Image 1 (cartoon, helix red, strand yellow):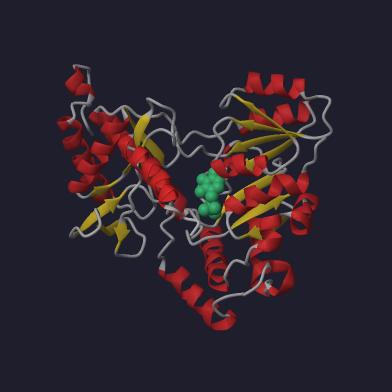
Image 2: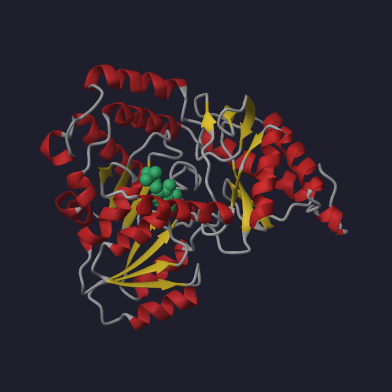
Length: 414
Ligand SMILES: *Cc1c(COP(=O)(O)O)cnc(C)c1O
């Protein structure tokens, strides 16, 4: 018996430590499809509560869209349930290639390769494309999956202070002797909801002969006037060398990711990226659903426009009520509470009022930067946001964190 009493005691002590720190994560069981209103069991065994969902990545409200479900069902009937293979053995159907081509057109790139997830795309890309002679220069707040991908790659690793262009320039100068320089950033940073300064990044890349890598998971489908992502928002369409993104957020929310960009880099991923070579194909039912999602969002900007309206409306409501928000113009609206314990209590109290939002604290965000991160969806209706605001105000008053309680001037809610 190798899992001895001593082993068990060791792990139990670590888990107890996580609980003592107040950062133990507990799952909430949702008894309904993903939507703007869901039925949640929390804690386990409690009665199910109907609540407004303010924390999903279902940005365009397509996770349970009837046309996506119908397309997925048709895909299931016509192409089966599973591929039982990785892509290069017998895991590529016509619809996998069709989806890659459609993503290439949508993103305005040269080619695209699907991965089981964007985590896998990021885990595989760097090792496949860069060597010891190159350098990766990443924003300090990039997603964990990029950090992991960089760890797997032998190129030199460096970082620049979050969105600090002077610091990035300094790093590009420092690494002038490397063969290739690659600037690495998220398009939208998920904890603060701010966007990367892509116009400046592209111009620095041109000046210092560097490639640009953008993970647009929190942007594809809705940021930019036609939803092409942060590259459209920043006016640099076609100038990003590598875009990675997910099908697991706005694009239907099931799973799957991709690397899209320069033809040769995408081909290197097909030849060398380990999650592409050694992990199963995206299931046909998801591929068929994602094709429908691209139909729906290529034909009209109606959904991303509604999302933009919802985000602006919600931000205005919170601001007028006196909440301390992180500034930004994305559907990620963080309500700053700073204290981890307060963030947890606030989320629990909101839940009791029928609003589902989660507190984020260290190590997900910096110490002393705890917050409730709210996320908008095109599926939200105005009355749901008004309802959620009432709960936020009630709980805000309870915890005495509203501007008005601190004696500050607060404008009247419109
Ligand atoms: C969500 C997210 C991922 C992971 O996407 P999956 O497809 O779920 O693996 C990667 N990068 C960023 C920036 C993300 O927000």
